[in-house]
Image (cartoon, rainbow, N blue to C red; front, side, top):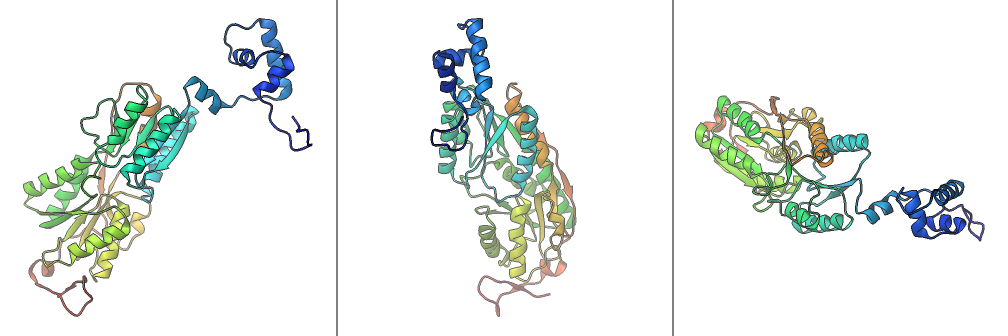
Length: 359
């Protein structure tokens, strides 16, 4: 259709169809949606008029009217971490194959923002929610309260004690076990574990496995709680690695945060590998390009994304997907240097917070 001012052609609406046929908007809606209450003659005239005018239904408006949609929400807690892009790639592929769409949002590790996003998506009556939540999974409960009966999937989170939710996560018991047993075999007796701050940890089972294995293997554990940004990890690691009894190895929660350990080691003139071993998690494509290449726990992020989307779409009762993992050994993982195990650390002649080790 063309505006009276001669402007660009505008798409015809349902009122245009009703006006052309001389019936109500409700009658046009019934006819176009195949609902009863419209004679066959009137239905044919409406369909012909819609075709002539080029009328196309607005699927989003239809979804809102019917309370149904094929759009699903995906809330991530930290999109600075490239791992979540791998997950998104797999989820988008599965959504495309099913004719569904994903609305992607980032909570920026803020529980308040996360809850606000969940409320907005519930108000839009999205068909389901996948979320990498902050903390214990309170936003999962909020979704269930606002959108009862719709599917919800927790990504990389235990969501302990919450029923009616599917979980998609790595095999944390195996992943932590592979790292800890290999470090023990190499002779490491002081090992640090990087975790999100108290109250923001979504997968506390990893920390439990770390502490349990440290006791079993005779390793002195050190838990480093820090916001999972490069800057915050560098700050926390700088304090930890400057101590005289500093750990000789660090297990990080991701390859992304492992970069913070690399940068801190450089600040302290420590060599990653010989002086401090680093083990990442996720095996990002760039991890083997670091200097030295990063040892890591490998998993398939794209497959996790597909598993996540499948659980939103399949209509089955909640069921978990545990991603298999393996340890990829690279030069960032080495036996501790004997000199660092027995030689005292000399602090002095360097800026505050930096450590010089005698060799």
